[in-house]
Length: 288
Length: 292
Image 1 (cartoon, rainbow over the protein chains, first blue to last red):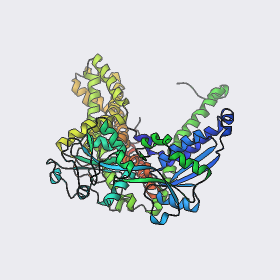
Image 2 (image 1 turned 90 degrees about the vertical axis):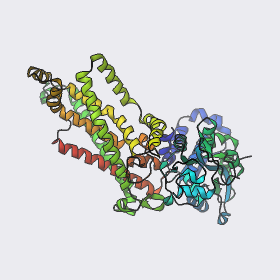
Image 3 (image 1 turned 120 degrees about the horizontal axis):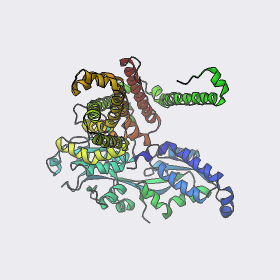
Image 4 (image 1 turned 120 degrees about the vertical axis):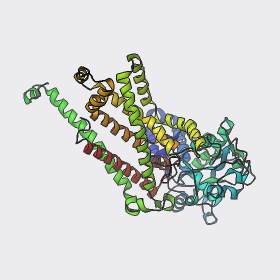
């Protein structure tokens, strides 16, 4: 499991980025200076906002820095609203917003970099093929506690919820208009992989994880199945197309139309070169 | 004994150097604990100021995103998991050490000891993974949902077993040979010797073992996180899922901000207090001679 690495990542990002920059700046002065003489990019970018996006942007930032050694990218998390506010006030060069842009945010230029999709998963031997939104809500609020009620076997439902603060939880609660206080769960998990393992080991469990993880595991023989939402099959493809309801766009925003370094970085973050990083973070790259 | 009078010290500057080196190292070891305490209090500070100490015990639930910070269910979870696993592991560990030292043929005892040492070396995430894919479905078949206090107790008991088994084995080895010979001369049976001579003589070592395993049981995180279900509730049966304080920190640290993050440091502070209470209790019970 990849859990240990995830824990302290966020808070330490600023420090990590600074550290890697320090190394990049100090060591290869003689070796790198001539080679990159033609590289005009220098300076520092401050990027703040959604904690969902921060790990991804920090990874992209690291790769960008290694391509342009004179650039420093400082990523700080603090929520989408901070991303919007900082970008607007110029406290940050770029803001990170992990949702669709609102009406009153038209003054900002927004650039989607990826999508975040979440889907319910069941054990593959569970006869239930689909659940209506109301049924999912009833299961998660403890009003339906037996699979029999929704057309399954006569067995108690094990509800798997996510730990507080996780972006998958936010997407899930937001779509089903639930409050976490009302959720009656039997298991609370952290990482996506843990959710998959829990459901794979319990045929009466229902959980939800990032679509990227679920699709990968289901394709590699883990006994889970992805439930459709609102009649749309759960797949990275439908998320990329933007038709899967339980998903949201991840944006980079700037105050004015971006120029210079910010423009280059946003273009890089939207390019195919970072699709592997996007998948690593269980997000879905945008369709071309 | 080597005499260490001032004469010897002044004649050998290396001795003086060593003395200062050891003093320095001892200071560092002590300072680390104090630094951790200071750091914990500083990081927990915002939550203690904004939320107040009382609310960590009186809030309706633990939902930091909605501003509820009740730690008591997790305190109970930690305590139950700890007590349960210690109750299982202690007799198993001590009795296995007795078997190993007094009943097993030497060849078997050697292999057995190696196996226990191996058990001590397995990383906790491996135990957790095994618990998640084997033990959880097994217990889930008996009484759903599966991830529960019981699973946690069993996994932690297995994890702390080597600690107590090896400590007990070492302290039984240290029982002076003349005690054993005296018991034989008195015509005591092997069982009576172990109960009446060996156990009283090895008491302090066994007690140290119990303290160490309890400490490990409180601190265990990864395996507990994977098998306990992590639902914040005071358990009413062995089959209820629980969340421990350590699992709480590990689960929510990555995405916690502001007061939520500070509240996790309060969890850490509470854990620290539990360990301090454990050490104090141990000290009190053994009259200041835990490690003697």
